[in-house]
Every structure is written in C-alpha cells, then in structure tokens.
Image 1 (cartoon, rainbow, N blue to C red):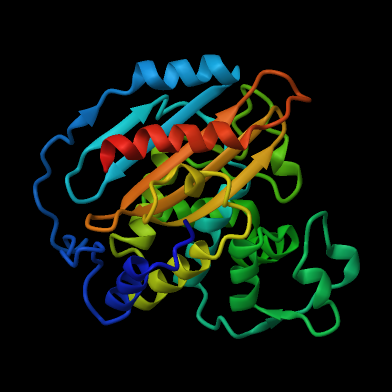
Image 2 (cartoon, rainbow, N blue to C red; image 1 turned 180 degrees about the vertical axis):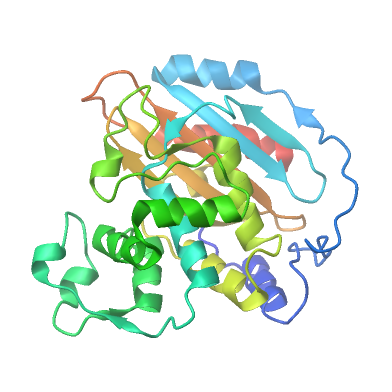
Length: 301
C-alpha cells in the first residue's frame, strides 16, 4: 500500500512538528546525543522459510528488517554483499538533504549529459532543475540523470562514500555512476552494500535523527511516492500498512527494495530485501521480493 494512509500522514505531521524522531505510535526514539544502553535485539529465525524461497525462485536473498519499537529483527544473509542498484538513491537524497545548504539552487545540464531512464530531467533540459527537484525525481521516479547530477554536487561517488562514512556507514561502497553501477556482477564489491547496512543507514536518516524533522519528513514523503515500488514490499505488506520505499534493479536478476513500513498500530519497521541470480541474462522477479516481505512482515507485525 502506498504510504498515503492516515497512519503515515500522522507520522509526517509528528516528524514535522519539532518533536524528536518518533514512531507512528508517537513514542520518541532516543536522541543521538543522549544514547541509552542497548540490550541485544531479539532475532526471529526465518532461515528455513527464506531458504525455501531461494530454492523456489532460484535466487540468492538477503534480508534485514528491524521493528524499531520492540527491537526484534529478521536477518538472513544480512552481512553478505549485494549490488544495491537504485536503492542507493534513497541514501543519496538523504545525504543531499543533510549537506546541501541551498536546495533551491538550479543546476543546468545539456541533453548530452542524460543517460538512459531520465523521465524528469529529459523534460527540463532548457531551464534546468533545482537540487530539491533533482532529489525528488531521483527518489520518486528513479531518474538516473538526476542521481548523477546529485553525485556531482557531492564530489562524485567518492564524495558520496565519504558522506556515508561520516554518518557511520563504512559498508556501502559507491564507486560508479548511473547506469554503469547496475552491472551487479557476482563477487563484485563496487556499488554494493549489505541488507543490514542499507537498512540501518536509512533508519538513521529517516527515523533516528541524522536528518532534522523537516528533512526526515521530506525524505519519507518522497519515498512514499516511489513510482516503481508497487509490486515489491508494498505488495507483500498486509492490508492497511503504509510503505515508503526505494526499489532497484540490475544485471544478474538483481531486484531490491529498501523501505520503511508502518503497521496501523505499531512502530515503523525498516526493511531491506536484496535478491540476485547467477546468470548474467537472468530476469528479475518482483514476486520474490514481495513474498520475502510478506513472510518477514507477518512475523514482525
């Protein structure tokens, strides 16, 4: 379900109201400046179910999901590397929101700079686009040229990597631009991450105070309007749950989704589902991501 339900609307209002980062139930999360001692998070073992799905779909699956209220997690191949494909765009937009002072500054570009799948930037070559508009297009429509222009603002993939390191993500490894980053060759480390790293970094930005309240609400709003995510986590979420996500696809049957899910009466669940196959020409399967999400969310909900 798209994250336009009353539950997510309430979250966005709460985040924008000047409170600390909050869950949909209104309980404040600890401020990063006042850490509390953490107990080990309880883990729900779904290894057999997820291995069965790997066999059914002939794919490798990585999952990390955490209930931000209870601390319960589901983790499967959570520290194995996968090509992140376009899921990185959620983190890219978050870094831009955090680090760029003037989001209304207009960036101009030429038609020669456009790459494949640039549905918004190709319509605005004459006048250019503001950084804010580029970030929104990057997340909502997965516009590849918009993502490249934002990478340029950060100093390229290396600048993006440095920004992630500064917020504690030393795992995600940006090295190339769109569309080269989607090759997803098995064993490659460039442009890869792990389910745990992607989920925890998104959690930090959207829920745990790495962005201020207005910035976090903006990121969540953009992700809630993701035009490419309907058959993925949203399809696996129970009826009435709200989802904000960023999907991705690449070579070797890579299909991913990174998101935040709000049960009607619970705290948000952050989830990363990454999938890939062995053959270079393998097609991806949306249903695999949806089925994984359904199994995980049923247990955490």
